Length: 524
Image (tube, rainbow, N blue to C red; front, side, top):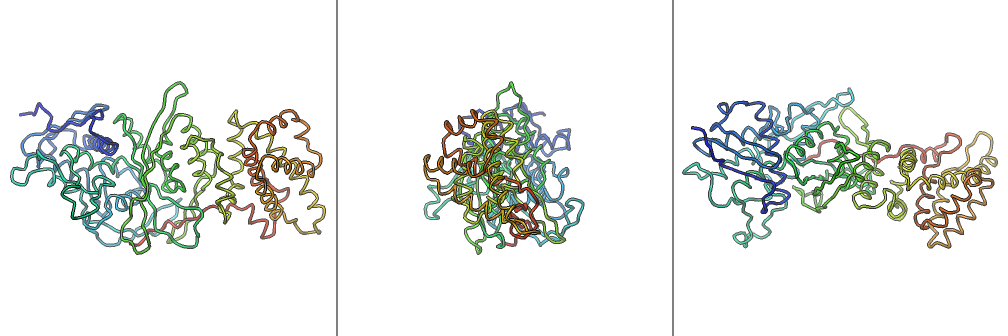
């Protein structure tokens, strides 16, 4: 006898759902889509379970014991492979390379399975990753069980094996951030869910995405435990959300290293195709988990940031990905070092805040960048700055300003080349540092424009200034002086010396000094 009424119904339009519930529904939708490929007939499934899916609803049908049907669904959805890695059926893990499988496994353990009561650890597994046609040794912690696999026991009554009619008590592994702070008050502060919503929450890990966060200002020689960013998308359409998450499997693991929360959110939507005539709006939450100290056994939720993305924001970020230096890997036999470009993440943060992509460069790259980690990135990203400005009608005016400023730099540097002893390079790096300091002394509009006028005069004849006198005069007159100071700063940082420096000091300015991160597996 075929069931005609759904045993469980879920809808995106339900008024009593949160972003976490809707994300879980999308993960369930993805899983059911994959399972129907593996088990096309309901006769092949426990309890003859079947489903009816639309863009915003999920209906589950089955016969007989609720426990038999739900147990089959959950066991098929959350598995472990032969090497102890988590296998999520909804992601079609067989189509994901080993490095991504390990990334998902370690991310899920760090965020959802943080406490050892939610998993049983196996041994450490040594394996080899193929990275850019090279073999790299890698070690990860395997599992023999995790809480998702046996959740049917929580959903069903023990004696009747039927779906519970009352509420199901949940904890943080099922609903991120859901923690009972004090044991004495747990009876009044415990978190409970309807059984159908508890089932949906089980599938949140399928649709979410993990990134690793790196702080550029830290001492790069000191190994840090991984900081995980988990992206929880706002779901408006199950099919659209599923296709987006499956597309993210195309990303290489080196791309999942970021130095800002904003880039983690934008990265989730980075492969979307936006149409010029169409509307586009997406939203997500990014949750930061990190260890409080070296001795901590588990990560703690440190912050939650809500991110909204419109068409212009996404298109601009896609241009940033295209034109700025990407992350790249330094491969050794037993380690992978990810070199992160923090300039891209800095721009991403500006975009999600709704400001110009270059808007707070002065604060970030001068005032807060005491060790010059970020400043040293600008030279290797100079092509990206120029192309981004060329592609923006609003920023094109600043290109002329950059050319004028750099021409003045050439005039000043020419004197240094003339004075340099034969066979020696002039101290360009020291001059660049002095120019940066001079800009830093400009504290208001008058001091900046006095400095700028004097600097242009010292540079001698300036062909770009002569060719664009009216336009450059208007830019200097009408633009806020703080904006011009940023573009003067970018002109200094992106200036390419006449000859390639040969001594150690000059080479340290022009080399690709990107943030280097050890990507070996951390030990708990």
